[in-house]
Image (cartoon, rainbow over all chains, first blue to last red):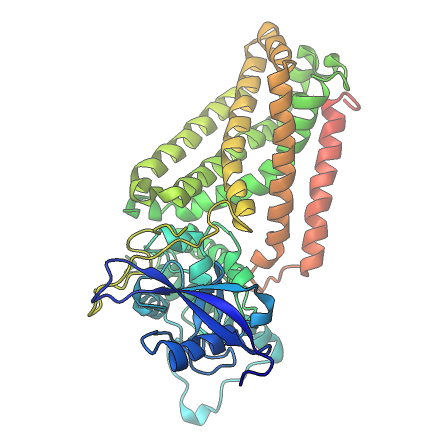
Length: 250
Length: 119
Length: 146
């Protein structure tokens, strides 16, 4: 185990709500292997050094979205980031802009509520009968939304977004991108319903196009593109509602 | 907190978007010539003598261009000022600050219309 | 180094079972790393309001008579005004480049039956419009035509 290992210092945010008035930093010296990712070091700390450290992780291959944390000030998937790109000291903190439950574990319930509110599922006025066969979708129709469907709900974009930091009601990049994904889906008939949400309290128009969400997204979803496309669609929806009012809105 | 403005946000965003797009495009030659080239003597002052300026400004195209380069930047500007205010922790006061900023842009737009009409 | 974000940032509608530590702003916000360009972009709002109001004053003066218009031209000659307009030009170019870079990806794949042109075409079109209008309007203002 000691072959090929060098030492790095990890400065990790710790917070025990039962004991700590506020989060504090704790340093650990870790013998790291050249192939390790940040997550390997955190798991080493928990397994070998300090079993009280709490952090989320699962797939180890950047598809589940569980292991998002701030690494040297940037939101990253810790299973994806090689330690070799960092210097002798690596600072690990919980995701920015989220309440912190304990150590590196943030409260994701706020995100789940925002995501649910955009109705991220196919909405049909009337479901097709089974006898009518499957719905067909061409490759061109798929291409219109496929990029936005790649979101793994890792919430790195929420940590990077200056609007999320300052406007609690804002729906945020991933929720809007996923809502927009469904509105673009040729099988969906729920765009009008989603536009009501997009123009509501969580308004897409709060986005100031910082583009930070796109910069940090590990799956190249480009949520900034989705949010700003959603703004234009919301404007068109608003303008057409002036001319052809729908019944029972707001 | 934002309720009164929510209904108008699509319109404000449209004005803001055109403010960046057309406002930037129209302001660039204005700043280049009126703000820099004439004062620096690169272009002679009589290029925009009173007679010529009135002739250009009172043409329908001139009036529209002048209206555009006043109104559109105002809406882009106040919307970005609002965002800046929020970014620096002003979200709790947005309900007060945002209407004031948009009122400034509205007053400026009305004055701009009067200004180009009276040329 | 950490600073508090909005106290209710990403807060769920109901509090959790244990007390949470308050959300923290990203370390680099607002002037570090990539955030600097974003913050400067938003700060150009002040520049645009000033430019719009200066243009309003100029047009109002034009409508007020020759003496008022000549006073505007005279005021523009002072060093402070020239310096401000120099900074303004840099600001306009910065805004244009940043915004035009983002514009193509902000177009939805279709609006009803209408599809936008390919992204490179949109980008070239925007710059062509910007440069074309700047050249044409500059020639007009400088006395080249009319």
